[in-house]
Length: 87
Image (cartoon, rainbow, N blue to C red):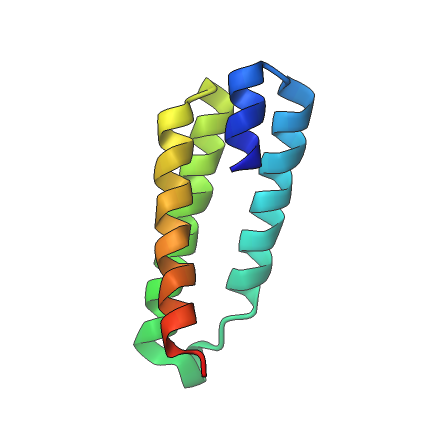
């Protein structure tokens, strides 16, 4: 969400920094997946993380706020799902 604000303001350096941080977080989430124990859930999550990473890359390259919003909404759905199953 911070990257969207920086895009609107035209702060390209800060936008790149925020999107790079998001990519790093996604990489960390994906590298932590256990495909042996996680099965279909892990495979689904890797698909979502890959989609979000691609959207972020495209949003960054094209300065496309709409694509960034799609990425944000997609990862928000995953976060909401985790919150619902967490005790």
